[in-house]
Amino acid sequence: MAQRTPRKSQRLKRGFMNSRFIEIEGEQPIFSTRAHVFQIDPNTKKNWLPTSKHAVTVSYFFDSTRNVYRIISLDGSKAIINSTITPNMTFTKTSQKFGQWADSRANTVYGLGFSSESHLVKFADKFAEFKEAARLAKEKSQEKMELTSTPSQESAPGDLLSPLTSESINGTDDERVTPDTPQHTEARAEPSQNALPFSHSSSSINKHWEAELAALKGNNAKLTAALLESTANVKQWKQQLAAYQEEAERLHKRVTELECVSGQTTVIKSQKTELNQTIEELELALKAKEEELERLKAEVQSANEFQSQKDALAQKLQDTESRNQVLEAQLSDLEQRLESSQLEREAFRDSLRSLLELLDSKIFELTELRDTLAKLIEGS
Image 1 (cartoon, rainbow, N blue to C red):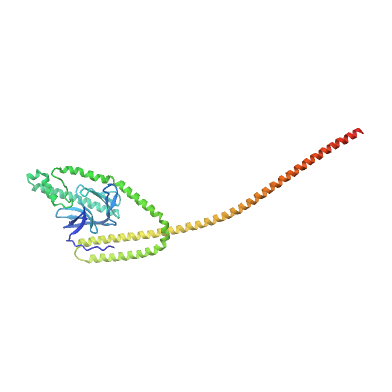
Image 2 (tube, rainbow, N blue to C red; image 1 turned 90 degrees about the vertical axis):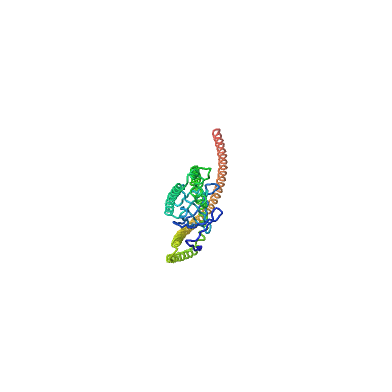
């Protein structure tokens, strides 16, 4: 497990976003969770591109100096999410464990994949809560600016919004307008920018699951090879299970030590949450390995049964072939005997025919002799 660098509550946190470093000073995390982070493909506006190889911490931050809420996620030293919550944003739950929102300032759509539906519901509730807080803060800011503005400033909307534009960092102001463009024009254009990624979300998710299905089919094709390695993998998996259990015990001890440390309450709670989530992930991994082990054992047993059935069928086939050979030999012998009997019958018929011809000739001679004797008797 990667070691986490110690953090101090009053120190600057640095991330990388939009090819430049951003500094978060005076901000504190007010809610944190873990999720897999995705961004919409800027070229196709359909496919999701993963920005983190594993689940990372996603936190809501509140800047009390500017009265704004931001969603920030760091992958090491790189900030993969830096999104300011505005009243125009909407968090959409596209499935039981996946949600997304559009950020027109970053010109992208962020997607989060959670480990359970409850984490998604909590994140969505916090999004709605901080969105409402951002709306109230915007209204209060506008009322304060209207009260403090002069008549000349009221006649020039570009001058009125210039303090927000000059103080904002990486698009943290609620609305960015130019002196020549009215504010309501951008308000109408923003939903159309958000609608394009959302209109493709369903097809993007379908393609994502189709890719997952294709990967599962490929893994299924490799099952035969995996069965041969299952016996050797059992020992390795047992060692991994023991290592995971030791790691879980170490993490539990680490959590206990962190609870005993005084001060730095926010950082300790955040680290405790991350460690507990890591323990949950390890326990889920252990459970998945055990289920996979049981499944492989069942597959091996089924393969052995199939092999025994195959051997029995092969033996029956061999016996059938030997009987077939015997029957073929008997058939050949019968054919030869039939042929010889047919030849004998033909010879017997020829002999009978010759005897009949001889008998006919003798009968004819006897008839002539009788006629001759009869004539002699009559003449005498």
